[in-house]
Length: 198
Image (cartoon, rainbow, N blue to C red; front, side, top):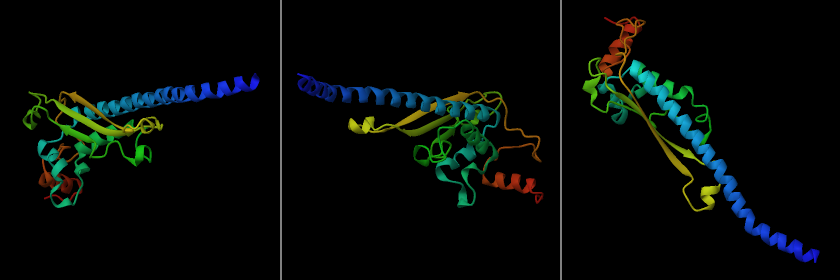
Protein backbone atom coordinates (compact mmCIF):
# COMPACT_ATOMS: atom_id res chain seq x y z
CA UNK A 1 0.00 0.00 0.00
CA UNK A 2 2.81 2.47 0.88
CA UNK A 3 4.57 1.71 -2.40
CA UNK A 4 1.38 2.55 -4.29
CA UNK A 5 0.86 5.85 -2.40
CA UNK A 6 4.47 6.94 -2.94
CA UNK A 7 4.07 6.25 -6.67
CA UNK A 8 0.87 8.29 -6.65
CA UNK A 9 2.73 11.17 -4.94
CA UNK A 10 5.42 11.15 -7.62
CA UNK A 11 2.80 11.29 -10.38
CA UNK A 12 0.94 14.11 -8.62
CA UNK A 13 4.20 16.00 -8.14
CA UNK A 14 5.02 15.55 -11.85
CA UNK A 15 1.72 17.25 -12.71
CA UNK A 16 1.90 20.00 -10.07
CA UNK A 17 5.62 20.93 -10.25
CA UNK A 18 5.54 22.56 -13.73
CA UNK A 19 2.56 24.67 -12.71
CA UNK A 20 4.28 25.73 -9.50
CA UNK A 21 7.47 26.61 -11.38
CA UNK A 22 5.54 28.67 -13.93
CA UNK A 23 3.78 30.55 -11.11
CA UNK A 24 7.06 31.09 -9.23
CA UNK A 25 8.97 32.21 -12.34
CA UNK A 26 6.02 34.39 -13.35
CA UNK A 27 6.03 36.21 -10.01
CA UNK A 28 9.79 36.76 -10.23
CA UNK A 29 9.67 37.84 -13.88
CA UNK A 30 6.81 40.30 -13.60
CA UNK A 31 8.25 41.74 -10.38
CA UNK A 32 11.53 42.31 -12.22
CA UNK A 33 9.77 43.95 -15.19
CA UNK A 34 7.82 46.26 -12.87
CA UNK A 35 11.08 47.26 -11.19
CA UNK A 36 12.78 47.72 -14.59
CA UNK A 37 9.92 49.93 -15.84
CA UNK A 38 10.13 52.00 -12.67
CA UNK A 39 13.90 52.43 -13.17
CA UNK A 40 13.53 53.45 -16.82
CA UNK A 41 10.69 55.82 -15.90
CA UNK A 42 12.79 57.47 -13.19
CA UNK A 43 15.70 57.84 -15.63
CA UNK A 44 13.41 59.54 -18.17
CA UNK A 45 11.98 61.79 -15.45
CA UNK A 46 15.47 62.86 -14.32
CA UNK A 47 16.51 63.53 -17.91
CA UNK A 48 13.36 65.56 -18.67
CA UNK A 49 13.91 67.75 -15.59
CA UNK A 50 17.42 68.60 -16.79
CA UNK A 51 16.17 69.09 -20.37
CA UNK A 52 13.73 71.74 -19.12
CA UNK A 53 16.68 73.67 -17.64
CA UNK A 54 19.23 73.01 -20.42
CA UNK A 55 17.23 72.52 -23.64
CA UNK A 56 19.55 71.71 -26.55
CA UNK A 57 19.11 73.49 -29.87
CA UNK A 58 17.24 71.63 -32.59
CA UNK A 59 20.29 72.01 -34.83
CA UNK A 60 22.36 69.91 -32.44
CA UNK A 61 19.56 67.38 -31.87
CA UNK A 62 19.57 66.74 -35.64
CA UNK A 63 23.02 65.19 -35.18
CA UNK A 64 21.51 62.35 -33.13
CA UNK A 65 20.61 60.38 -36.26
CA UNK A 66 23.03 61.84 -38.82
CA UNK A 67 26.07 62.06 -36.54
CA UNK A 68 28.19 65.13 -35.86
CA UNK A 69 29.80 66.30 -39.15
CA UNK A 70 33.31 65.03 -39.55
CA UNK A 71 32.84 62.45 -36.80
CA UNK A 72 35.53 64.15 -34.71
CA UNK A 73 33.35 64.60 -31.63
CA UNK A 74 30.49 62.53 -30.20
CA UNK A 75 26.85 63.61 -30.11
CA UNK A 76 27.13 63.91 -26.31
CA UNK A 77 29.88 66.53 -26.62
CA UNK A 78 27.30 69.32 -26.28
CA UNK A 79 27.05 70.28 -22.60
CA UNK A 80 23.25 70.32 -22.60
CA UNK A 81 22.87 66.94 -24.30
CA UNK A 82 25.52 65.43 -22.04
CA UNK A 83 23.80 66.79 -18.92
CA UNK A 84 20.53 65.17 -20.02
CA UNK A 85 22.23 61.81 -20.60
CA UNK A 86 24.09 62.07 -17.29
CA UNK A 87 20.77 62.69 -15.52
CA UNK A 88 19.31 59.58 -17.17
CA UNK A 89 22.29 57.57 -15.91
CA UNK A 90 22.20 58.96 -12.37
CA UNK A 91 19.63 56.53 -10.90
CA UNK A 92 20.21 53.67 -13.32
CA UNK A 93 21.40 51.20 -10.70
CA UNK A 94 19.83 48.27 -12.54
CA UNK A 95 21.39 48.97 -15.91
CA UNK A 96 24.89 49.15 -17.32
CA UNK A 97 28.04 47.71 -15.81
CA UNK A 98 27.53 44.27 -17.34
CA UNK A 99 23.91 43.91 -16.21
CA UNK A 100 21.29 43.28 -18.92
CA UNK A 101 23.84 42.32 -21.55
CA UNK A 102 26.17 45.20 -20.66
CA UNK A 103 23.89 47.75 -22.31
CA UNK A 104 24.19 51.25 -20.88
CA UNK A 105 20.79 52.80 -20.15
CA UNK A 106 21.72 56.26 -21.41
CA UNK A 107 23.40 55.16 -24.61
CA UNK A 108 22.49 57.40 -27.53
CA UNK A 109 20.69 54.49 -29.18
CA UNK A 110 18.15 54.30 -26.33
CA UNK A 111 17.54 57.96 -25.39
CA UNK A 112 15.87 60.46 -27.71
CA UNK A 113 15.46 64.18 -26.98
CA UNK A 114 12.92 66.08 -29.05
CA UNK A 115 10.58 69.04 -29.33
CA UNK A 116 7.15 67.53 -30.13
CA UNK A 117 5.88 70.91 -31.41
CA UNK A 118 9.07 71.70 -33.35
CA UNK A 119 12.44 73.24 -32.48
CA UNK A 120 11.10 76.78 -32.94
CA UNK A 121 9.28 76.38 -29.59
CA UNK A 122 12.63 76.49 -27.76
CA UNK A 123 11.87 79.87 -26.18
CA UNK A 124 10.38 81.21 -22.96
CA UNK A 125 7.20 82.38 -24.68
CA UNK A 126 6.09 78.98 -26.04
CA UNK A 127 8.09 77.08 -23.37
CA UNK A 128 8.57 74.05 -25.57
CA UNK A 129 7.64 71.47 -24.51
CA UNK A 130 10.71 69.28 -24.63
CA UNK A 131 10.48 65.54 -24.19
CA UNK A 132 12.81 62.68 -23.45
CA UNK A 133 11.93 59.19 -24.64
CA UNK A 134 13.80 56.09 -23.52
CA UNK A 135 13.31 52.88 -25.49
CA UNK A 136 15.23 50.24 -23.59
CA UNK A 137 15.23 46.47 -24.16
CA UNK A 138 15.07 44.47 -20.92
CA UNK A 139 15.86 40.76 -20.73
CA UNK A 140 14.09 38.49 -18.28
CA UNK A 141 15.84 36.96 -15.29
CA UNK A 142 14.24 33.51 -15.47
CA UNK A 143 13.86 31.02 -18.33
CA UNK A 144 10.04 31.33 -18.15
CA UNK A 145 9.42 32.94 -21.53
CA UNK A 146 11.98 30.73 -23.30
CA UNK A 147 10.31 27.64 -21.80
CA UNK A 148 6.98 28.86 -23.13
CA UNK A 149 8.50 29.56 -26.54
CA UNK A 150 8.13 33.34 -26.20
CA UNK A 151 10.58 36.23 -26.63
CA UNK A 152 12.45 36.82 -23.36
CA UNK A 153 13.06 40.52 -24.05
CA UNK A 154 10.62 43.38 -23.62
CA UNK A 155 11.29 46.94 -24.79
CA UNK A 156 10.33 49.47 -22.16
CA UNK A 157 9.20 52.76 -23.74
CA UNK A 158 8.84 55.75 -21.43
CA UNK A 159 8.33 59.38 -22.47
CA UNK A 160 8.54 62.31 -20.09
CA UNK A 161 7.58 65.82 -21.22
CA UNK A 162 8.37 69.14 -19.52
CA UNK A 163 7.89 72.82 -20.27
CA UNK A 164 11.10 74.76 -20.85
CA UNK A 165 12.13 76.72 -17.76
CA UNK A 166 15.51 78.08 -18.89
CA UNK A 167 17.36 78.48 -22.17
CA UNK A 168 20.60 76.86 -21.10
CA UNK A 169 22.10 79.96 -19.51
CA UNK A 170 25.31 79.02 -17.70
CA UNK A 171 27.09 81.90 -15.92
CA UNK A 172 30.22 79.77 -15.53
CA UNK A 173 30.77 79.84 -19.31
CA UNK A 174 32.48 82.82 -21.02
CA UNK A 175 29.40 83.77 -23.05
CA UNK A 176 26.99 82.44 -20.39
CA UNK A 177 25.81 79.88 -22.95
CA UNK A 178 25.79 76.16 -22.24
CA UNK A 179 24.20 74.74 -25.41
CA UNK A 180 25.72 74.73 -28.88
CA UNK A 181 23.50 75.42 -31.92
CA UNK A 182 25.67 73.34 -34.26
CA UNK A 183 29.25 72.16 -34.73
CA UNK A 184 30.58 75.63 -35.61
CA UNK A 185 28.97 77.07 -32.48
CA UNK A 186 30.36 74.18 -30.42
CA UNK A 187 33.88 74.88 -31.73
CA UNK A 188 33.49 78.57 -30.90
CA UNK A 189 32.18 77.87 -27.38
CA UNK A 190 34.96 75.41 -26.66
CA UNK A 191 37.72 77.59 -28.08
CA UNK A 192 36.45 80.36 -25.76
CA UNK A 193 36.52 77.95 -22.82
CA UNK A 194 40.09 76.91 -23.58
CA UNK A 195 41.21 80.52 -23.71
CA UNK A 196 42.10 80.18 -27.40
CA UNK A 197 39.18 82.19 -28.76
CA UNK A 198 39.62 85.30 -30.90
